[in-house]
Image (cartoon, rainbow, N blue to C red):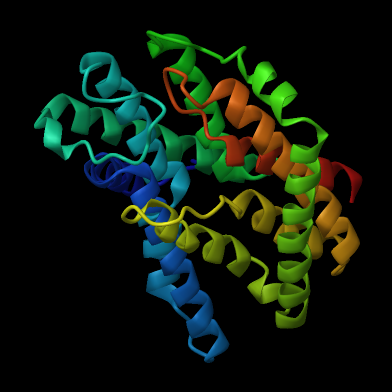
Length: 281
């Protein structure tokens, strides 16, 4: 059997937590937990319980983030005046609706099953991101009561012009090159810490009314994967990080922002770029 029945029940409970606290909030916690795990490894301590139970189950995005995202979609359909289905920054506990919490639990359990199955069969891309995308697409097709995509995104890109893509390309390559060098120097055991740092940095993007920070885990996750598959090639890591980032940008505008439900744009970029890396290298 490709899954553990106990962990399936555990995932259901985790999904309720995801609905309680919100998708972005739990993802930020994932980032900080990852940083702690890698810091302990650097200190020579093997963080068995923290890594296996907390990071890879309690805070695994395929589980807890899925719980939050699907619960948000259902809540927005039920309470359209209070929520937007694509906005995963909101805690749903203020609704005082037991059924919404249970939806989060079911979605997280499904996320766990998909993640376990994809890992079991050796899916040649990111198993967690794939589970997030598939569940997101299913929810969009079945629960959407509004826009399924945003055709006006074309007008946005026309207004921005080529300068927009130059700006985004420079920023992406800077992030990819800096993290690529740091991770290569740190060694293969630490190739995943870039993703954790990016997730944790979102705290500054969603806390208070201060300056927002960009989403970068679609860059750093692919950089770590590319370094591992190519023996530490920073140029290749930068190239595929750029592919991931630009897919993220386009998908976010056309299929997520102001749409009726959330389909995670960084996950789409990560899945496509990781699949290409595995097919080529």
